[in-house]
Image 1 (cartoon, rainbow, N blue to C red):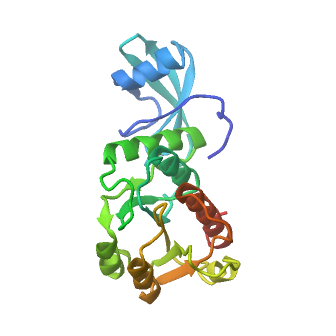
Image 2 (cartoon, rainbow, N blue to C red; image 1 turned 30 degrees about the vertical axis):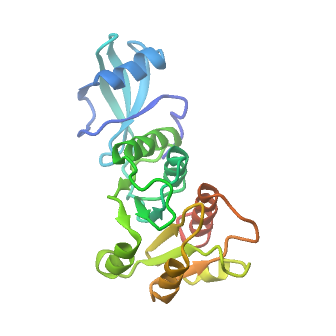
Length: 246
């Protein structure tokens, strides 16, 4: 997205948009724009919905409980949503993990329940809120899809039917330390997914099941022990740089 309006507030609004229309914000959106960001009538902001691009807006009305925006012009055309699937064993710092996955270009985010998972029942509404917040801040035009949580065994069993020819990369903490670049370079142009395990790592039988699947590509993330959220950012950066959209 062009950064010509990078200093303006950005809001995600889940409704159709076109130049010239007016949009009434809900109570929470009004509070954020008017009371938190202290914007008033005549000020400008940018809105997007993940379908129609981004629009430069003028605040037509700025009451304490109701604000209205007028869409002045489209500031960026809609781009194709990212296709990268990101699966993770939910940890306590879910806000950080979802925000970083969104910033790094994940298009589909799905909690995967492994044996040593810390948070087996993540709140999907909170996951979506974290993704929206990150999309607003980092100027992406599409909010990642938050897929329902799935068990580890069910993920592997359903992968070929659900994902077709998509290859699944996983951070193998037990692999010998080696550069992952060669393995990822062979996947350039392929549809990809990334699976990151919990803080305690994958159980032995989970790792064995991953290594036995013909659609799985293990990579090493170096000689040091990484937190799960750090491992996710490192692996996403590698994938995007070597075989993704960077």
